[in-house]
Length: 146
Image (cartoon, rainbow, N blue to C red; front, side, top):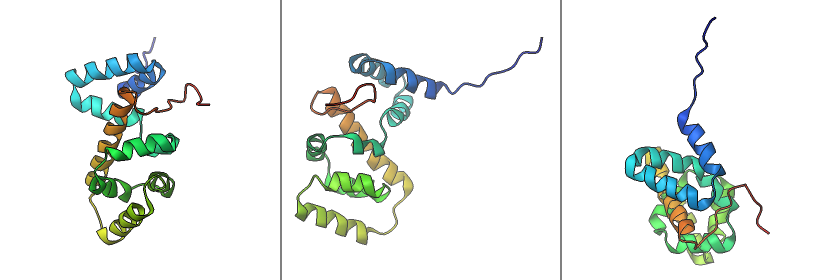
C-alpha cells in the first residue's frame, strides 16, 4: 500500500482549536504558549484577532481601546488598513482628533510595511489585554451579541 503524506499547518490548526475554546480556557492556553514560545504566541494572536476585526467591536469598546492607544501608533496602524476599519476607529474620536489624524496620515508619506504591521499588532495586543480584563468584548463568532 502506498502511503500518502498529509501536510498539516499546525499553526492554523491551533488557531481553529483556540477559536472554539471558551475565552477563559483560550486565555490560559495563550498565556502558557506565551511563556513557552512568545514568537509563536504572537503569530497565533494575530490569526485569532486580525486588525480588520476592529470593525466587529462596539463603539463603546473602540472608545475604551483608543483611551489606551498612543495616537502616533494609531496613525501608523491606520496607514495600511481598509477605509472601513479606519472609519470605524476614527468615528470614535472627537472631530478635532479625527482631523488631526487624517492630516497626519496625509503628510506621513510611505511607511515600511513592517512598521505598520507592528503598530497594528500593538493595537491588537492592547485589545486582547482589555478583553482579558473584561473591559471590552471581542466577538468570536461563536455567539451573536444582542
